[in-house]
Length: 100
Length: 163
Image (cartoon, rainbow over all chains, first blue to last red):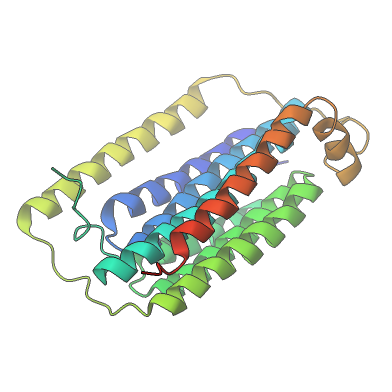
């Protein structure tokens, strides 16, 4: 049987890939995808702990994270759409109106 | 089985981060989502696996692809200036340090071993639903309000401004 630590390490790897993507990519859409990847990595941790502790509360947490991710994707993509309509770009380096 | 699915998940996640085209990145993210759904099946979370495929690989990624097609972005991710590359390198180092400490924490602590006799119907729709509609009823209702707010917000943000 695969031990719990392997699930956690896989989750950590996926989370790290997502975090690196957020910091290195400049395309707002790909940054959003990386955020989704990070949320998924956390979901995997919840499910793995839920299985190994024999407690189903983790499933509910995952359910809630999925709800929040869906809401976030809808609102976030609408924001990107509005920005693209005004600025003709989705490069986050060009979106610096509130940088001060 | 775990190692095959995990390897494919990590590989497609790497392809997603390194790919220049947003459409290809979205496609490899779908592969990662499907691999994670397989992981959930391995962990007896059948309802969550089905939801993962429907919500993530279905709804959210279709929304992403729709926006990518709608925007029709020209590729111009040019070369970065010197201090920006340095800044990104510093961020990657920080993230790598956090990753190493995460793995060390996993190795150092005592993790629970798998309990063999699982509770009856672990991870089925019936079991998850029973918890969701008794112990977690208030968070469930709050989630519905959140979704309503997201619908209204998305419509207001994305609609054309009529002058």
